[in-house]
Image 1 (cartoon, rainbow, N blue to C red):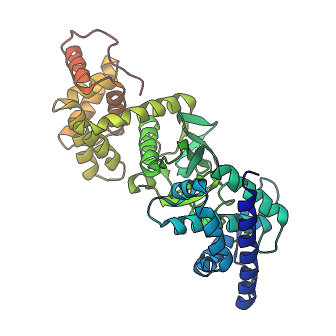
Image 2 (cartoon, rainbow, N blue to C red; image 1 turned 90 degrees about the vertical axis):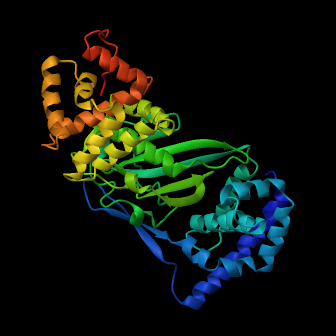
Image 3 (cartoon, one colour; image 1 turned 135 degrees about the vertical axis):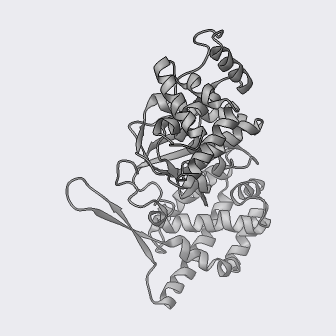
Length: 405
């Protein structure tokens, strides 16, 4: 124990808060609200786990808890500890006052952790000691461990796949969210964890230095969804919310960006290691769109087309190819995505119909996705266009274009 004086003060606050909250329960005349976690089994009936909703009950009474003498005394002690201020800023962000950040992240956090371990407000020394040890380890640590999890639908996975360092697709572990958020089941997609295409999550992990802010997780998740959609053509969606923890403590629940949270129509697909590696490569290349407005427009139009019907889908697909490959896209696209002459000719016919607002075939729709994949994988879009035109003229070197989509 690095700070025994702090442990005594915080223990006094939590003990006093337990006594206060027990009296509140008696005044209400009811027990703590609770949630049931269902644990399905292949054989036999489902099992249910009882989880008291401690956090909401405590939050509703936080103002009165803060005004108690033991809370004021604990805050006074925490102000003398520099590590406490750093911890509170990291967990609460820059907006709250120093006292508000200290109270909510340290005092309320420790109170809730202890109460959840006790299953209510019946005191247990061991539960408090464990909760305090976890807090102290985080309080005096040299870095913060950030983790975010977003449910995925429309995709299955056979094994854990790392897209890029710190970002992976894996199977959902039953009960992993309920540990911090007993109400998590109501925030998950329908039938999540029960269907073959509804049991994966995107997990983002990062080690943050002292004072370093958490990543823009909503943007990171949205980019990952776009990359996997490009690599697989799966009707993928994330969310609707992202669950965040910092140093193993609840940090926040925030919404996924709408275009990533909406599931497009289509047949579900499986993410294998090959396409997982392709998705990771595309994810790294998506940043190029920040400096290439035409590439950004092509990507936006293609992703919007996933949610539209004719004639709006066709208009978006034409706009995507025009932005990516220019006005001669009906000729350039077959050369980019097909190697066989007969296949090129057939695809050119389909794309010519798309260009003249005729029938939008499945091959033409998929060609837009494949063209974007190759456009992102090529070292530069200008060089890609030059290579395509040289091949159209018959002067290009065979094998200069990437074809792995």
